[in-house]
Length: 444
Image (tube, rainbow, N blue to C red; front, side, top):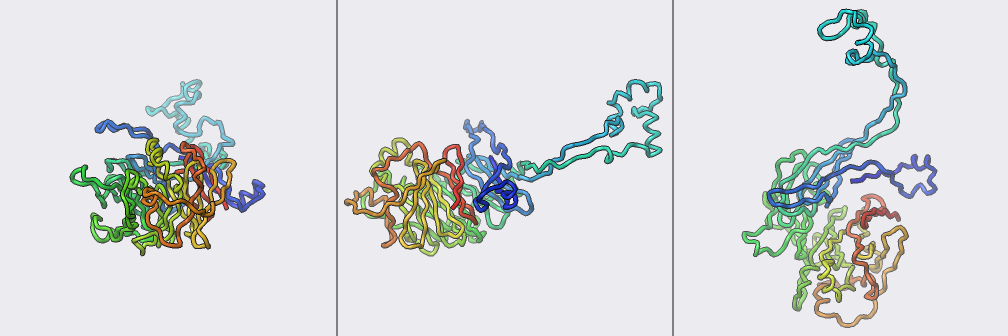
């Protein structure tokens, strides 16, 4: 795990940056979060790959980070410490008492002097009595050479999930967090690593009766009792943890009406929600499935406020996407601090940004690379009648809120390069995008 810190305006001035408004980040520290493990009971190899990272509230100047791989969650503390370098030191053999036995003078040339059983010389004891020992502080001079960030693992939360962990989320109370796998959601306390509470369990008595799995879980930004989680059927369930210890009954379910027509093999796959995010005001939820990016109002359960079509042009290629497993890719989404702009990723390392509530619903595509190429959103053009599969994938959309397709059918995607992970700064227009083994920061 690598941490970078933003330069302050004074630091930018000292480094002679021309544009001081443009954010610049410097290397802070890095550490190994997880190591490869092996579960001998299940004969399963656990990779060191990190699935999720979350910042925790900081009661002091230290940084607290939650990171998880498929099975184990760790709480890390990153703290800055001042590093000093010795500039001048007295080479007297009586700097510290422990060095008397190791100094050459104590063994050679003074062996005729009587000594006690503990090895201290009479000369040394005499100086102790006369308080004539050299001052330790007056013979060592040190200088500060800077601050150094050190990391330490505070807690390890393990052995609570039978399936791979897909999401973790911090609570607004600053004391608890949840971890979710395919069938269960557990509630943890940050100070207690040996115990957790299972608050949602979707595992049926017989696995043959399994109809859906949990794909993502997220706490409300300021109501610590509200939790939202999504499923592979395209549902978003909102639960109130005050109602019962096991939140089997959802307080509200956000879902679209099922379209008419016959279903296909790909209908449920492309309806699976891969990520959900709350807006900062707590009134809206942004969700991403394979085809669309949707904004939901928590007070409207039957349809989203607006839907943005990301992969509508890939409908004729669903069979090929299924054969190469690309249809199972999990794209994430994020919102700006004001809740008016949304972003998600696509193939060919494309970053898709949309603005809500400003005239027509147009978006912008930009390739995430060292030399980005901005592609404007195409205007809607007359299209032929869609097939039944296309109608099923598009679902139901409110009149007047149907967005044009992102890209065209003639545009060829590179399915080997895909932008899956991204995050928006909570207070600034900075987007972090993880493409391959590189991290790109974009500022507007």
